Image (cartoon, rainbow, N blue to C red; front, side, top):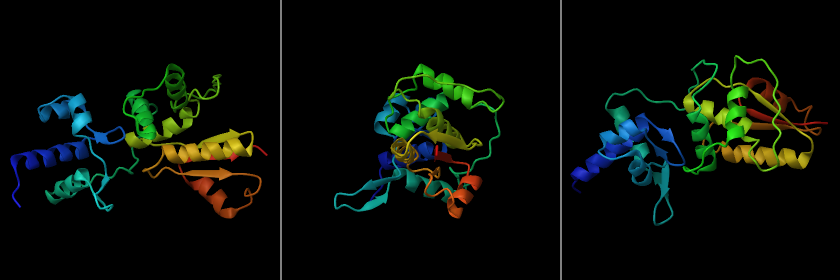
Length: 221
């Protein structure tokens, strides 16, 4: 089969998405890179964003364009990009990373953090602050984003994370938080471990809790 100029352009666009990703639900790229492809960011988000895999008409799962772009990029001699590498040591991160974390976690590119989510994240995620904070908001207003969002935002940025210990007053709420966090972190290496009265003496659970820099949930006895 022949390869057209459009095909070459498509693979170049996928390489751009790979080397300069902006994580929404599919992966897009910043405005300055989109302009190199002779269109705006909204056009790029809508028509040229990338998913890691796709399902064919006969039901098979295969690599999508961005995975092929990764292979081409490495074949050209470029360094392999490791999305799980966490090495940036910084007290705070740019506020737009929290918006990107919410978009990535909910798989909805159009959402953004509300005011109390942003203020809480900036306060709790500033490693130079050694103060306590209390967030008083009704149920269902996104308070859990203050831990899920911070962890995912720093993961997406490649910034060093700290552990989160979330105390839940009863087992039903604990199970809900665990499921919610697991769904929010889907497709990443972030992990959730829950500790209850029934498994608090389990060695593996305690070892996991002690060693991993991920989100953790704990039920009050």
